[in-house]
Image 1 (cartoon, rainbow over the protein chains, first blue to last red):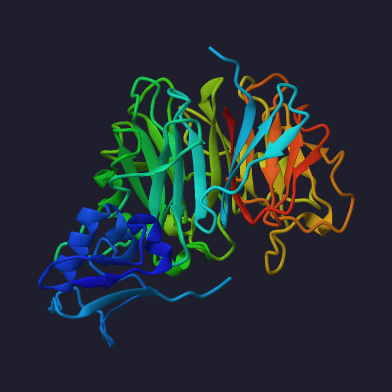
Image 2: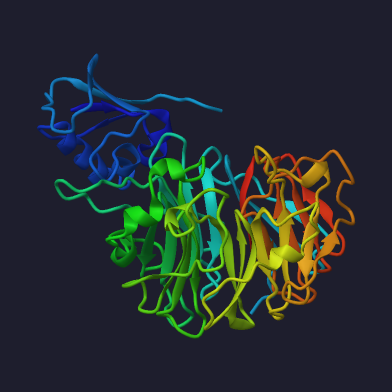
Length: 85
Length: 376
């Protein structure tokens, strides 16, 4: 599926848009990590929680559960909120 | 071997910097920022393989990680498997690593071994030069962990921390760690089992001293010239411990009463176990933790804490409200010892004469978290 990448993670992918495969959000993020080692831990903590300021949208629908099914025909948007100075 | 330059590895809230000096340590040059925007928590050179520098990092929003340089800081590669707590078993308390706060190279006989102390409190070990990290289960899974650490809200505002990871130069199995909060602990079996060493340490008035979670050592250092001697700057005083003794002696009682003995950093002399340096801060009322009265000063003892000397030559005489964090003061191993401290207002000050006189060698940097001496 098509995946767009937040700018703080571009050091891993080198480009704004990549592709990854998987039937669930977890599988897609693991596939991303296979392609771009280290990227998953910056987004997901060791207990399987999506980090506070990371947001993942399937098209326009926000997904917070790693077990959520994803549809290869849709676009996964990985975005990051910013707070503080 | 080519002679190397004195250097400082600077960790700031907005990235890392490297300062290099000429051999006389008079002239210092600051590098461009390294990983600008990433929080740099600690950078440490490997004394066993000086090409190697580890760099603990996070950002305000991405998860924590570790960078490794194998070319004295010219290039950096992310660790394959940075420190992380294990996935919690069903029904057990979960821990999520905020960041690796403190880095310590392992024993001279164990090339490639490193320790990392984390926030929240945890201890991790790498055996491959920082590429992959494993939790030290004897501490992180200790049955009394929650009694040592207390609740997260008991920790410092930036998160509770495990710091001051010390490896006895005579015995690779003999470790010390300290926790804010959680006290000072010792292991004789490379981290498998632990024993608290808090006797003699004061706590904030009104709190129960018998509870480890109220103990707040800020920085503990072992004297390289006498590994049986430790000095400690605590939230509540300056201490010395001579092993095999187990009771800390509050040598800060000998500080001037109007200065007190509150502070963050502790620096020990590389060759003289009677000498250490501290940077006192204001611990009155609401704890401003700035230079007392706006008049910055380091203090040194040259007699193991019996008396203290104020060191201010070159520093502003007034109106300087500095904070120097626990990792932001260090000494090199040259003769005379060079001393360095960094402020949260982004200045670095240096002394080439063991603290007698000081000079600002960098300013306008981001908030300084940590300084370490290096040879690059």
